[in-house]
Length: 336
Length: 100
Image 1: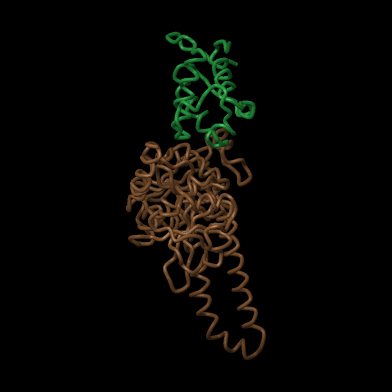
Image 2: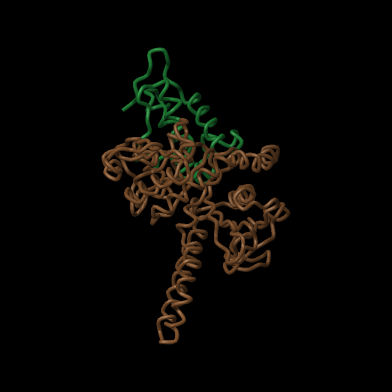
């Protein structure tokens, strides 16, 4: 099992990415293919040499965060993201992990792996933590910002298939993120999508933003723009809430005394639980291969967890599950 | 500049290029190829977004690159290709043929 890792992707690349990859080799027993300009990658390796289980794939270009996704994959054919995707396509790696330009990582995976038949556009599935409960999946967390109702319906099918593996649920429930629970709520995209999903196994109707951390339902479907805004809003709100708690704990002598007991529990339990690095990344659903997209500010710990997720997805044959899930719907569409 | 055509191949004409584009685009968009007429617009009629067009261009470069050495599409030209006819004429000229 070998994972291609875009060594140049992310705010703290290549140092955090390479450190995470080396740690993953030790901790998970996987092999890693580090993709990036060799001199830059070697500078992060102890002694400048890759240890056992690590290979280097040299390239001359890097796609920056501000580069236009689709065009950059075409114009920078020797970029680390593109070469990483090609390594999977050509069988040199079993999966890829990238923390760089999300759109470009998605485009590289789409163009080099190809799409699962019946899927128009990919979506990122991110597990959202639920206090004292099973996490649920937010689909799409940012891969495809402009969506059609048909694409959202495909996200629902893919999300359900992935939830079976990722959440261990036999019959996952699916909700459509909207601004009200009633069927008529939402903009045109939501209303048309609701009509397509109505009657689909597992569909429980609309859900609201406040349901995002309740675990009801197992899969929350939305377009990539809304999903990304919702995810970042949750992260910001949780960080603000944690900051507020620690401010209050330091505000009086009594509070400070109490915090000596409470603060370690909060730090160890709550912040670790809500830290996005714990999740590591989201799986790109709908492409014909395993691609995990991590957030731009990924630490070494996030990369370890992203590689672990990629490993799980390969071992769990998640792509084959996606194909089985989407195939009947595709056959029905072609028969119409 | 037109691509260098292999000696064993005649330049493709508009009919053949249309057929190649229709086949690739039908697969990419998963639509009936009959919808991909010369008059069809990529954006409005076929609902092909920029990523779909890039998929098409990559597929054309792979297939036609085997016939014509160095066949490629300039990304700067993509914005000018509004209809299937625009794409057919562009490809034929790039292959060194006549779009007429």
